[in-house]
Each structure stands twice: as C-alpha cells, then as structure tokens.
Image (tube, rainbow, N blue to C red; front, top):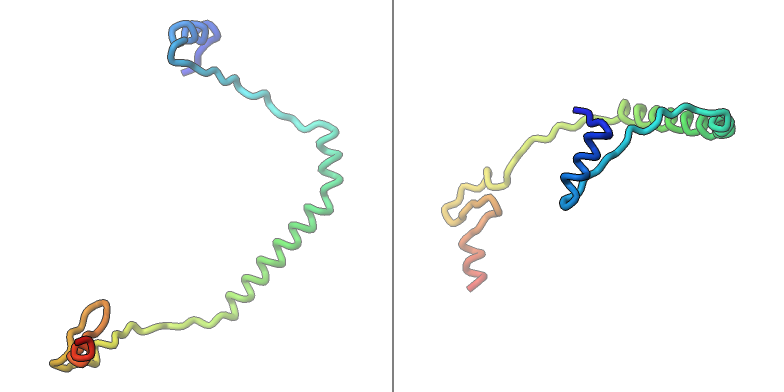
Length: 103
C-alpha cells in the first residue's frame, strides 16, 4: 500500500508520540561521463582480477581432479574385546585391571 503525502501528514499528526518514518524512493541512477572515465581507468585492474580468479579456479579444479578418494571403514576397538573383566562404553573401555590400579 502506498501512502500519499497527505497520508504521511496524517500519520505524522497521529503518531507524534510513538514516531514514524517516511523514506522516499531513491532517484534512478544513471552513469555519467565521469563514471565511464573512472571505469576506463580501472579496466586493467579489473582484467587482472578476472585473470587471477580464472587461474585460481583452474588450479582448484586441477587439484580436485588429481585428488585421490579414500574410503574409510568404520571400526571400533571394542568389537574385538570379548572379555568378562571389561566394560565397554561409548567413551572407552573399562577393565578390572584399571580398577585395581585406581585403588
């Protein structure tokens, strides 16, 4: 919903205690001759940055193409322990030998 200036005057009058805001539409920007001149001056740096970005991207792509993929098998140490004197917990293995060494 768009408010007219008369609407904003009414809002300002009614909302004096709590506040209000009117933000006008910004004017349409168009490049001027000085903007084109600045762009022309900066063109070598822009081209250099583009070239550097291309080289970086190509380097990353080459690195990824040459990278070996590894598959890891999930294993747990406690799978091989079948002793009656040990307690296997997610945080580790507790054995009767370690209990004796604590006391």
